[in-house]
Length: 600
View 1 (spheres, helix red, strand yellow):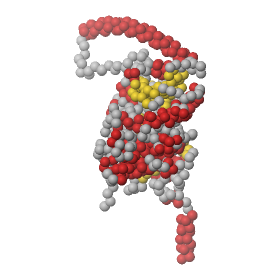
View 2 (cartoon, one colour):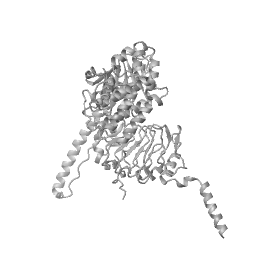
View 3 (cartoon, one colour):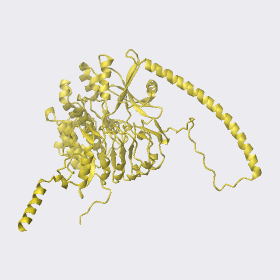
View 4 (cartoon, helix red, strand yellow):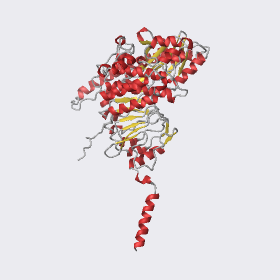
């Protein structure tokens, strides 16, 4: 009997040693493996999502609540993931952040996601998702950010979104949503930028009245009061006569109005058809007018786009840069775009110019300004971009749109700008060296999210002989020493310019501020002089009252490495971004929906 017990114990221990250890994996870990099974991970980013771990908390893109090790965040943007979002996502009941933007996901947004009732941020933009928004989205009562822009979603916008009282960011733009936008709850507080690029939407938010099948604006009659007294029999006959007369008059008026509208509609259709035929006729290579739109992101008829471009004048000018004048173009549905009229073109044929523009137009990234299209008119060449409401960083720090950017906002701008440059340097094929990084080329949207502009234009629009002279004249103070000497731009010269940009954010001063004359001539020398004198408080912009010593010293350290005189000693943009991200996450921990856990 004793021998039997020993044998049994031996078998139990042996089976524990040889049995797969994934049996110890948490339930959230098993759920993540289910989610992984529906994804196409072409770059093998999720290779450490393995069933032999006890916890998923160290897996790529996964963050857990420290108290109970439940998954709190899935952060997998820009990873070229394909496949679908598994309905198993609804099992992660403690999930607070889901970021899958800028991937290649298709299929639908699973309704099970509404089971994640602690969800605060949902980023699904720039994928290929179809179907509609789950009707129960209103169950996510803690949701503050909801971004599903640049997908192929369609259908009506659920009225339940109006119940999301904590919602601060809503972006449904560039999809195929249709119908009236509900004027309910928080939905009534968002403007046209949240819905732009959905041609079939109507409502007060997009300044577009909804219309009946006859083309008239919808006007709902007010119901009669239930307490109204019933008319007498005598007055009833009188009222019938009045009603019949009124209806006859209204009928005649209706016929006249319809005839007028029909004639006007035909006239407009004829004009549009004529315009379209002119555009179509001029699309051949020999024509003087040509319109090219990139990756289907400009959902307007060609005739309307060209008409708007041709009508731009001085009243529409919003700025100017080294490559031309920038205009604000407003479409018929109030969609707004920026148009750059370029002053010079690269030597060579238009075909070469347009082919290289198509490469730039194929690039999509949240921190790069989206190039929507190109138009060649008889007298000019025009580039069509997304319009960024807050203007440039230069405007906000020093110019006409100057506003108080606190330390947190500045760090966010540095992080986003670095992310955009990482994409250009490390993810584009071929890689793109910007050549002209400066605060006027960092544009801000309404949420102060930065977007790098004019990437690729320095090489495309300036010939090699004139390149050094032209760029130095426009951006002196940002350029690396070796770039000034040789005129050869590299990724490391971009890193130097980004380091100067970081110093501009910290100090609030331009790179060649007059106050630098006695101390280093530019912001790099000025900073080094003050730090040697241990005068950190004089480096930081006095308007940044919320700046803390730890992050200021860290950011200045990163900037010092970026602006090293020796390009070989500078970090890559990937390393710069990782360092900035570390400090940004340190300042912005993910909030918890319930009171913090306090051990007894």
